[in-house]
Length: 238
Image (cartoon, rainbow, N blue to C red; front, side, top):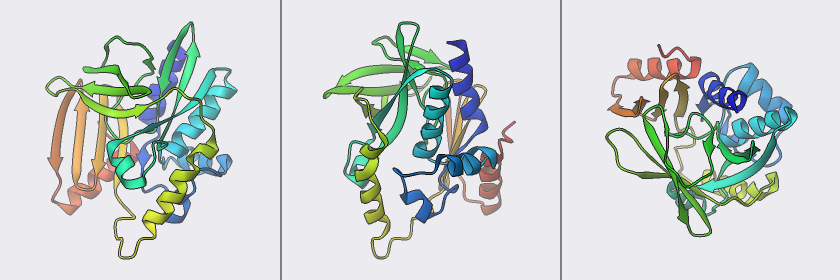
């Protein structure tokens, strides 16, 4: 378990989530991706990617290392509204030592930095608390910080998935991006884990979660915005 925990955290600290890693044409492809090409851009070049780049590669890595890993799908309120499907977010589940663990190295918001056990008890990581509550036919993953209330990260079921299950999302995403007059196809959404938490930049909103304490700022200065974006993408966050 210690190896899986280290792999998960180090991946989040080393490879950023980045909406800027792939152009719109590349980003529309969710199902039929070239794993070697994704590895070259996301990992070797260190440019990161979205959940279906990062978690796809992590799923392959864990499988090649001999872990019993299953692909899962989750959804967010924002994603369901935008894309009209519950098969949105891609992540995984690992069966190990008699327990099942959620693994996710590609979520663009505060979440678990280390694998999360699939159980009904509250779990604490770096000042954040997590719990899984019943939701419809599956679960809602909830998180709260030191001074925040419980909030839903995403909902999901434990139904095993395959790459083709994301075809509806791919088609809907293509439709959304082709809407006349749409000008938000290059949204800035980047994040990376640090030793005691995570940092994110979404457009002009900068969020830092360290030891469970959240700090949010709106970045109005262009130079500071470029500096913060560069630091997240490069990992220079000390």
